[in-house]
Every structure is written in structure tokens, then in C-alpha cells.
Length: 309
Image 1 (cartoon, rainbow, N blue to C red):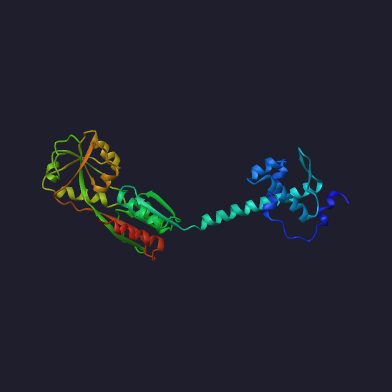
Image 2: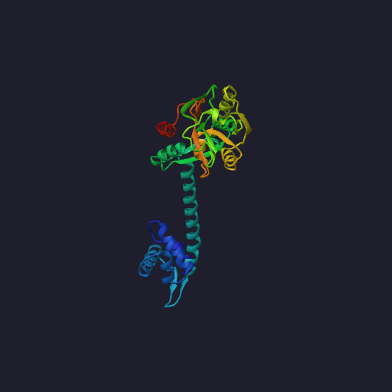
């Protein structure tokens, strides 16, 4: 009987294991027991024993062995084609399962209004991650309008924003208030003061963040300033807190922004001073759907509220 018929005349046996297919395929590709064993990370004697057991199990020889060389028999060549198909199918299944696990992984998607990133939010997110390390956390930066639209479309679970929304199907939870501060160049004559009056800023060019079309945070201060007894001169309306601080550091004037905005773009040559006369503070909110929050979102809300102080 020729060797190709060997596999057709198999004894009754249990199915081959993936380990056996893998050992056989590596030895076929690396026809040297020592090198194949090294590649597999096992001992040479273990590999020899596995191959002998495999040949006993299928009832025929699959390798010709010499002291220097190992060569496939015709039956071995046929088994190699089958082994490669089995191993390829196993790899495909492994990758597919991994993809399913990734897609099934719990995920929390949070939008962050571009102007309110601060250490308080970062601390809350870090605390939440300590008990949800297996959950994927996505954080995206959005304008107020985009934040609202993506929450409504189900693309985000919630957003942290200075915008208060009163729309059907949406809930706005106030997290904390954010006081206003003055940003001054380090060498400014007012920088040595512990706190400032608005009247102290009457003769200085001021920079206030330009209002975002969908936000209220910046409009609060812009709407309030005309009511102050001492007239104030707004010289610049930068679109970002970083641009405002750079303008201040360049000696162009004094900036007005919230405390968390100032902390987020701290510069060594710019000092922040609180204002004694109260301006209406900015309000930071969590914006979400009116549907009951998921356990993941509920946990994050607790962490955010714990950082109100």
C-alpha cells in the first residue's frame, strides 16, 4: 500500500488537538528537531515524543528522520495541508472572538465642552476609572451645539458643559459653580494684591473670552460688565483660554476668565487673583438624556458630585 493511502487507513482515534497540529506544522516548516523545539519553546525530547505519539495515533509515519535531516513523507505532506487549514481556521476564530469581546466591552462616552476642562473633572474621571478599569472611556471635545446634538443622537452618554438646556428629553444637572478671576502679568502693579475689585480694572484693557453661540458661560460676564459702576474696556475677545493667557503674558492687558479655565492654562508669568465684588459665577452642568442613566453613568455622576467642593 502506498504512503498516500496511509491517512485513508486511519485507526479509530480521538480527534487531533490543536497543539499536535501546531507542533507538526512547525517541524514541517523547520525540518530540524532542535530548531523546531526552540521555536515552539519546548524541549527537543518533548517534541520527539509528541511526534511519535501523533504518528501512533494516525497509524503511519509522517516524517523520515536521519541524524541530520527531517523530511515529510507523502502522507505527511497531505497532513500538512490539513494542519494548515485547521490552524488558519483557529487563528481566524481567535481573532473573531477577540473582536466580539472588544465590541461587547462596556463603554462610556463623555463629551467635554471645549472651554471647561479642569483638574476637578480629571480627578472625578480618575476616581471613576479605579472601579471601572475594564470599561472603555471615550472623552471627546465638542462645542455646545455639537454636544447637545450628539447626546440627542445617542452618540454620547453625557456632556460636561457651561450650557444649561431646557429641552424635552434632556436633563441638566448642576455640578458646581465656577468663580471669575483676573489674570495679570506677573510684574503688574496689581499682581501683589490678594484680591481685586472690579474698579481696579477700570483703566486697563481687558480680554474676555468671545461668547460661544450655544454657551452661556462667557455671556454671563459680558452681559454683567456694563452694570458695573466703573466703566470697563473690553479690548480683546479671544476664542480660547490659552490665547487669553498668552495675550495677558505679553503685557497687553488683564484677562477675565473662570478659575478653572485659568487653572487649566496656568503660565508661570501670569497670576490669577479673585474678585472681591461678586460676579455671577459660571455654572458647570452635566447634560444627559432624560432616560434613566446607566450604572456606568450613574457612577461617574457620583464621582463628579463628590468633587463639587
